[in-house]
Length: 567
Image (cartoon, rainbow, N blue to C red; front, top):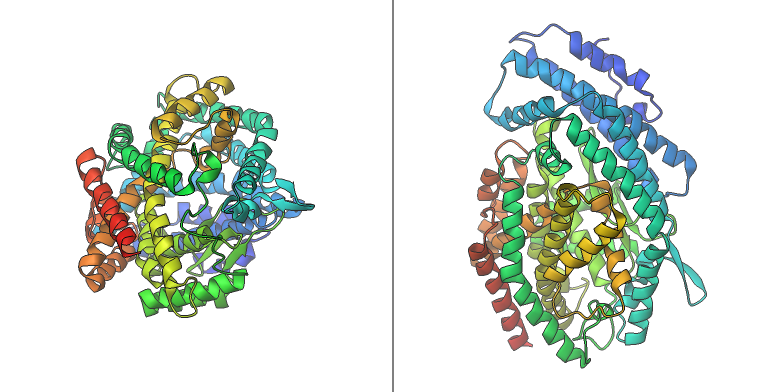
C-alpha cells in the first residue's frame, strides 16, 4: 500500500482495528530502501507514527475524562492493549531496517541509539504481557476515577476536597484528610491484588528480556543512557543529607506558626500566613484566562501558544465525578498540538499544576518543527525541566493586574512554593527508593512487606510530622501514587528536573532575558542530543551529589529568609 494512501488526519483511525493499520506498516517493512529513498521512508514512517499515536492519545484523553463510560473505556483499551503493543513490535521491525542500513545523521543519533536499545530488549513474548498490564492500568483508573466521598450532604470527587484540606479550621482539615485517605483504604485490598498482578507481569517481562529484575529493564527501556540505579541511590542519600534537615526546619517553623503541640499530616496543606484560604479563581475558564496573562508576561509567544490551546479546546481543567485523578500533558503529534488534563478545585495548587503542565505544552510547541516524530519525544528528565522551570519563571507574574493574587498573596504563595520544592524532593526520593525496593528486594509481591517498606522508607524522608495512630493512612499514600501503578520508575525525573529548574531560576535572577533564551532554546532540541547537553543548553547540569544539591538547598533557604524579611 503506498504511503500516499495514509489518511489526512488521525480521526480516520479513531475506530480502526489493528487489521486496518497493519498494512501501512507492512508497506514500510517491504518497501525497497537505498541511500536515495531512506529519508522519504523515514518521513512516511514518522507520519504514520504521528497518526496512530494521536488516535491513541485522543482515546486515552476521552476515557480519562469520563471513566464511567464503557464505550470510551473499550476504545481506549483497544488502542492500549491491542494496537499500541503491535505498533511497538512493528517499530522494532522497522528500526532493524534503519539500523541495518547504516544510515545516520547528527540530529538522529539519539533516536538511533534509542532504536538500538529497543531492538536489544524487545521480546515477542512480552507483547501480550504489556497488553495485560495496560488492561490492569485501566482497572486502576476505573477504581480511582470513581472514588467519591459524602461531604456535608453532597457526593464529591476526591480532588474537590482540596479546599477543605487548606481550611484554617483544623478539625475541617482533619476530616478532609481522613476522608481521602480512608477512601483509598476502603479499596486497599482490590488495589493491592491489582498491584500483585502488575508486579508479577513486570518481573516476567524483565526475565524474558534477560534482566535480573524490572528495575534493570525499566532503566534500559526508558533510555537512561546518562545515569543508572547507583546514581539514583546517591540522589536518595543526598536528599537525606541535605534536603531532609531543611524540610525539618520548614515544618518546625510551620508548627510554631500554627501553635500546635504536634504537626499532624492535615496541617501540611494550610497556609499558616493566611487568615483564610486563597481562592485564586472560580472556574476552569477563569483559570485558563488568567494563566494566559501570566504566560504572556513571561513571553508574548508563550502567551500566544496558550491562547491557541484555549481557542482549540485543548484544555480539560475542572474536576468532576468519574474523571480520572491527577493531571498530565499529552501531545497530539500529527496536528502538532499539546493537550492539558487536570482536576482543578479552585485552590493555589491548581495554578501551579497548570503552570507545570503548560511548561510541557510549550515544549511540544517548540519541538514540533523537528522533521521526525521520534525527535519530538523528549526524555522525561528534560520534559520535567521544561515544566518545573516554567513554574518558577512564571511565579513573579501571578500578581499581575487581573491576575490570580494580590502582591501580599503572591509573596505568601512564593514562600509556599519554595517550601514545597524542598518537600517535593523528599517525596520524590521516597517514591523512587520505594520502587527500587519493590523490584529488587525479592519481596515486592508481598502486600504486607510492601506496606511495611513504604512506612520505613517514608520515615527516612519525612521529619517532624506526627503520624501516631495514622499508620494505615500513611500506607494509603502510596496507593494514591499513580506512577507506581501505571508508570513504574517514572518519578526520579521530577527530582532531577527540580534541581535543574532551580538552576534555571538562579540564572533568571542574574539575567532574565538570557535565562529565558537558554530555556526556550533547550526546548527546541526535542531529543536530538544527549541529556547532559540539553541541560547545558538550558544553563543547568544533572545533580546527584550532596555537595551540589546542598548549594541549591541553601539558595532556596536564603530566598525564603529574604522574603520573610520583606514581609
